[in-house]
Length: 147
Image (tube, rainbow, N blue to C red; front, top):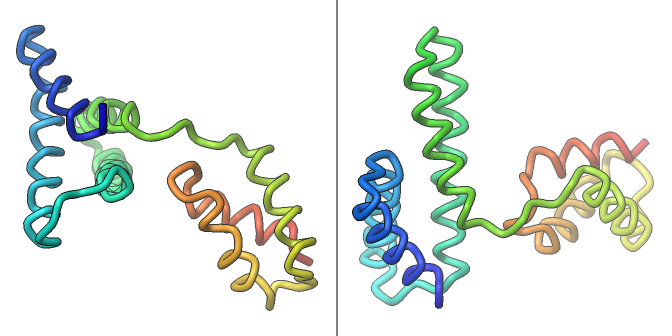
């Protein structure tokens, strides 16, 4: 079962369970996916779907920060629930120790010796962690490990 079918099945399950937050979140995701499919003018691959889900999770994180700083805990809680639902469709995220081990390996592989080589390291590293680690965490790890 591909991701699109899984999302459709989860929508049906949420309707039967009368889980309104999950239903609304998944319907919004399906709408976003449909818009991307129309823009792309072809069917979406699982990789395309994951990119849309990651973008939606990032939007929710930004909204949570904005609502929290604005004193709107109720809206921040709703966004947090939606974000957790969306994260259920993403592959398991790498731990910080896994990220650091991979960063060390890529630094050795590329021969990076200073912060000036950060672009070279990030360029080699991001395809390896795509979808499994947040870019900010990877950047922080690279920055901390380069002299």
